[in-house]
Picture 1 (cartoon, one colour):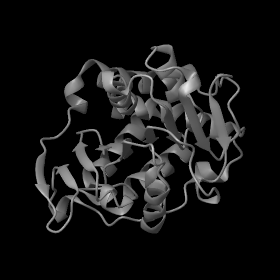
Picture 2 (spheres, helix red, strand yellow):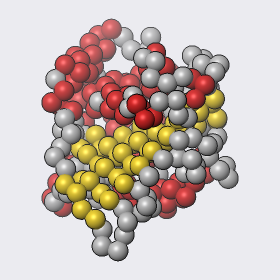
Picture 3 (cartoon, rainbow, N blue to C red):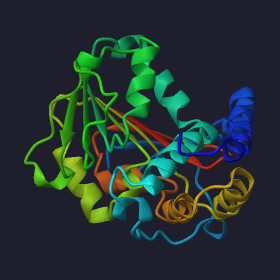
Length: 266
C-alpha cells in the first residue's frame, strides 16, 4: 500500500459517510427545456452566475508523473476515495445495471487504473469481454484478459472502437471546448448512451475540496489536481453543448458533493 494507515483513516471515514448517507449525493432538482431552433432536450438545474467560476483547463500534476511513480500511485488511490465521496462509481453502476443496457458493448474513456471496470465486473453488471478501455497509461496488472485495453491518445486515432455505451469518469474536464467538439464527432455510430461524471464548477466545491484535502491528508499532487479539476468542470448545459449532442436527449444533474452528471441517449 502507498498510503499509511494513519492517512487512510480520515479518507475512509469521509467515503463511508457519503456511502451511508445517500442524501449527500442526492441529485439536485432539475428542470427541462428545449433550446430554440435546436433538437437537444436538456434536463438541468441552471445556476446563477454568482455561484460559478470561469472555466479554465490547466495542466494537472498527475499527468506529468510516470504511471509507476510513487506519487502517481498514491494519487490514484486517493482518486478512488474521491470517487467514493462524490458517488461517481455508484451512479455509473446504477445506470449500467439498467435492463435495456444488458449485454451491450462499453467503451470507457480515460480508464485510469481500471478500478471502475473491475468493480462493474465483480458485481456481474457486465462481462469483461464487452469492455474496451482507452487511456494514455499502460494496461494495469489486474486487467482482465477478456477485456480490451488501448494505450492511445484519444485524438490520434481516426475512429473510436464501436460500442453502444460510452462512459467517462473525471476525464472530460481535461478537454478544451474544441477538443470536446472533436470528441463528439468521434463518438461511435453504434453509441446510443453516453454517461459522464465530472466536477461541478461551483465556488462551494473549491471550499469543499480544500476541507476534504485537510481532513483526508491528501498528497500535494491530489490537492493541486482536485482544485484544478473543479475549475475545469462544468455547469448547466455546457457539456452536451460542447460535445454537440444536438440530436440527443440529455439529462444533467448536480450533487451537493460536487458531481456533475450527464446521461445522454439517442
